[in-house]
Every structure is written in structure tokens, then in C-alpha cells.
Image 1: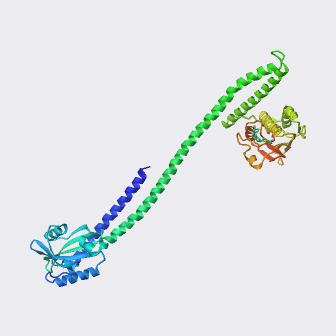
Image 2: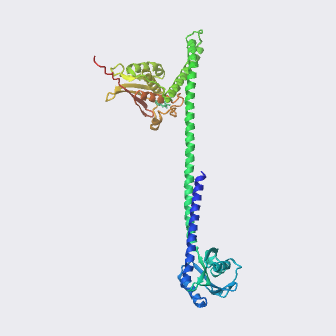
Image 3: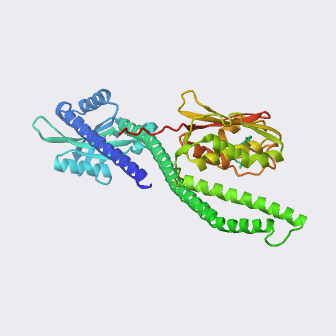
Length: 447
Ligand code: ADP
């Protein structure tokens, strides 16, 4: 995370530094070139001070604005004397080797070779023009020769590198802006990346937890089965008088215990179905099934429930000739039990109508279970087949359930090649319908 921004900064600084060095070198060459040109064309004689001064004025006027000041000096004893200058006040001044620049006069004179050195603007320059403060210069000291090639004087010129310094500063500012922007983008990307990584870890954890939950449900439901079976056995022995006659109050209590155990057993079976379906362990064995038989059987099972709520169950197509279906008989029964028990459960009083008919293309039968109960709103339809979903309203208050029945029903219908639908109006009733493939006899070869 730190390496990427550090590399970008390092690279930018390196580029800027290289740029600055090459520009400085370029300027240095340019400054020396001006001095050489002056040497070759402008200066003829040391004695002609007036013409030297005129040459300087010409040079200052014609050369680039970078050219700031000019001095022409001739040796006098152990010193150099200014004979012409862009600052006329300098003329006649004597320079010895006591300061940095005059030391260069001696070096240039002795070696007969130009020198170029970067320096800040002198106090005299700043005094003449305060805008020059903080400007950098190339201080060029160059030996001048007469027509025969003899050294006759020294030229000291100062060339400002303000223009290029400004340019570099602007480039530096621009590239710093781009650098900051790049860093922000990199940091943003890194943050997104880190978050994505955290999400990936979280998703893995969630998967693990989900798997642990599935395993726990499966294990707990299995373990609950045996004690429930034992409870069921002993309670039925109590109710059929195997342990002696029961008082009326005793019979009532046993009936309550029996119904609670039944609810517990149903819940455990639902949970087992959920874990079987989720782990793809639920097997269906498809065969030719008479759907009329299954529906009639379910109605008989539910009759007591319906009667206790004064609900009539109508099944007008009972016994009518209907194609057989290709289904798992137990699972088909389970689907019918879930839909019919819900129809009774969520209908305070009224009727339930069951119909079966072939679909227009005759590949499937469609079974409809319609009640005149509390109904549901459209947004509730959408979540109905989700695991553990229960409608929470005034009318469902006090009705016991787990929210697993319809989810299991949908899975079972689909496992057998059908589809399930719901149509409901609040306060009017609900119609659940599902399709199931018609049985097609396998073609046998004639011998
Ligand atoms: P449960 O009945 O155990 O709560 P289900 O999965 O069978 O779970 O049903 C989910 C929810 O759908 C129920 O809680 C109920 O609100 C609603 N529901 C199911 N069948 C009907 C129906 N016939 N009429 C009205 N509401 C129903």
C-alpha cells in the first residue's frame, strides 16, 4: 500500500530533477555561446573603452531578456579593473581575489578559458531592480581576445535563468497537482480493494456460518426425532388407558400434550426437509399417481380441522376421470396437506374449494386450492415463498406457524417438474395453484 505512492513520488521527483539538470546545462551552454559571440564580433581593443561600453549597451539591448549585466575588465597589477559595464557606476572599480566572483576572473584569465557558475542575484543587482530578488543567474567569466588571439580582457556577464526557473516551477506545480490526483486515485483504489478483500473474507465467513447453521439444524432435528417418537408412544398409551383410566381433566391434559407433540413433530419434519433440500439430499421417486386419490385422502385427514372451524371443503371434480400424474405420491400428499392446512388455518370461517383440471396443452394438470379467508396484499405475495417468511398483520396474530411450509411446498412442486402460483385479495380469500406433469406411459417395443 505504501510502495505504490512512494514509487510514484520517487519517479516524479526523478523526472523533475533530470529535467532541471538538463535545462541548467542547456542554459550554461547558451550563456557561454553568447560570451564567445561577443569575443569574436564585438570587442576589438581594450583601449577603446567607449566602443566597449557601446558594445555592452548594444548587447544588452539586442540580447534576450535573460541577459542582466555585463562587465569588461582588464588586468591591472594583481587586480582587475572594470573598464566598461552595464552599471556605469562600476567603471574604474578594482577587483582582487578576495570574493567568489573575482576569484573566477583569475581562474578564467590563467586558464584562458570561460567559466560558468550558478549564483543568486547580487545585492547590487537587487538594489538596482528589486524584482531580481531570489532570481538565479549564470555568472559567466570569459577571456576576450584581440584579432591576433591574445588575451586582452575579461568579460563577466550575468544571465538570469528566471524564465526557465518560472517554467520549471510551473511544470513542478502542474505535475504536483497530477501527482496529488494520482495519489488520491491510488488511495481510493486501494481503499476499494481493501474493502473488496474484507467483503470476500466476510462472504467466506458467512458461508461457513451458513454451513454450520445447516449442519446444526440437520443434527438437532435428527436428535429430536427419537425423543418425540418416544413421547408420542407413551402419550398414546396414556390416552388409550394402558396405564389405567384417566379422569376428565387428565384426558384434557393428555389431548393438549398430544397436540403439542404433533406440532413439535411437524416442526422437526419441516426443519429436516429444509436441510435435505438445501443440501440436495431430498430424493423424489416419480411414478404414476392417481391425483384424485391423494386429494381425497388429504381432505379426509383435514376434515376434523375444518369441521372444528365450521369450514366446508368442496371438491367437485372428485372421482371424475382425470389423467394420472408423474409424481412422488408422498411429496404430492405433503404439498396438498400444506396448502389445505394453510387454507383452513387462514380462513376464520367459510369454505375451501379444490379443483383439478388439465392445462390447455394437456401436458400438466393444474390443482387449485381456493379459500375465502383473510387473503394477502400484493407485496406480501412476492415474499410468500421465501424461507421463514410470515405475514405479520392483525388477522395473522395468534396463528401459529414457522414460515417454512410454502417454501418447502414450492421446492417439492419444482422438484417434480411443476410450478406454483398464488392469487389473493385481502379480506376476500386466496387461491394457490400448482401444476404437475401428466404421466406418459413409456413406449414398449412390440415383439
Ligand atoms: P406458516 O403457515 O407456518 O406461517 P407458510 O410458509 O405455510 O408458513 O406460510 C407463510 C405465510 O403465508 C403465512 O404465515 C401466512 O401469513 C401466509 N399464508 C399462507 N397461506 C395462506 C392462505 N391460504 N391465506 C392467507 N395467508 C396465507
